[in-house]
Amino acid sequence: MEVTTEHSSGVPVIKVEGQIDMSNYVDVHELVLSEINHGHPNIVLNFRHLDFMDSATIGMLLRSLDKTKQQGGMLVLVTNPHVDRILSVTGLASLFKLFSEEKSAIQSLPTGASH
Image (cartoon, rainbow, N blue to C red):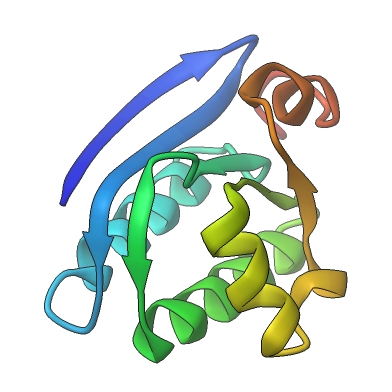
């Protein structure tokens, strides 16, 4: 798994490539929590180049979504057909705002830090 974080228009974008599973999902969750703790409750998780995710990843997504909402923010996802299918089959697609392009995901969120 390769993870990078950048800020675009004041919104954190956490890009995850490769595979995310029970052995490494905590790394992504800690990045989400760190961004929230630094005043960024609106977050884009870019899974466009994700090849695999398991049930631990789904749990992390739900906890991350809940945490952003508790802070008055939103968690949005950039997906690919594989991720879309997993979220659809599990009945979770309707809980998230899903985008095929990072730019659209960023534009869907308020910009800047929330204080």
